[in-house]
Image (cartoon, rainbow, N blue to C red; front, side, top):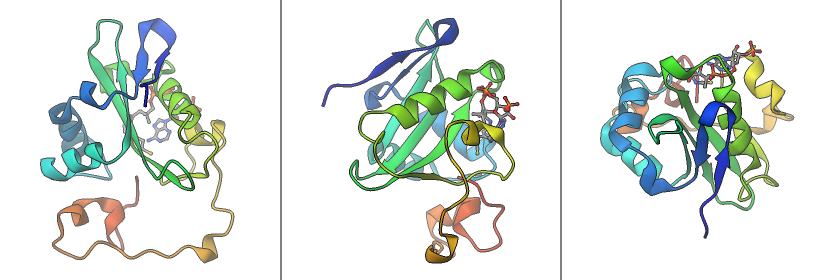
Amino acid sequence: MPTVRWQGPAGYWVSDERSLVDVDLVHGWMSQESYWAAGRPREVTARSIEHSLVLGLYTAEGEQVGFARFVTDRATFAWLCDVFVAAGHRGSGTGSFLVQTAIDHPDVADVRQLLMAHPGRSLYRRHGFGDLLRPERWMERPAPRGAATSADAAGRPGGSGGQ
Ligand SMILES: CC(C)(COP(=O)(O)OP(=O)(O)OC[C@H]1O[C@@H](n2cnc3c(N)ncnc32)[C@H](O)[C@@H]1OP(=O)(O)O)[C@@H](O)C(=O)NCCC(=O)NCCS
């Protein structure tokens, strides 16, 4: 499948080329700076990147400054998660550009997309996300205690929620 690249504001660009993604950098963001995946082991992050539709955000010079991924079969379901923009590059539309390119990606543009986020944030609502249409139909089986992914806040009952 050909890779997709989008040109954005101020020289930023987004690519779905997995080999461009800096796994150590993303691991640092997830495990140390995110509220939903604090402590996530590097091996888990590496596996998640390997099996997802991944999007990297880069400066004009090619430095990676953001990340997002879809867990998806590219046919019926797509979960947008691990959306992150490096601190020094936030607040000027880069996050919006990253989310827009993600939801428009040709592999998932026509697929129902889901995400978990802090309630009340406008970013995702601006891009067409809303409350679950039928929340009563959704069920969740949290990761077992002690499993590597149970470090994720979203993976445990009583966790702070998140992506
Ligand atoms: C969320 C994030 C990707 C936004 O990137 P950004 O470059 O600041 O985004 P933009 O400049 O395009 O837009 C900023 C908008 O995002 C909103 N926003 C900030 N943090 C947010 C968050 N955690 N979740 C959702 N929206 C958020 C801001 O309120 C702002 O909305 P407004 O324009 O209506 O005021 C970035 O702040 C980030 O990586 N934060 C840390 C990780 C994180 O919280 N990820 C999202 C988890 S749901």
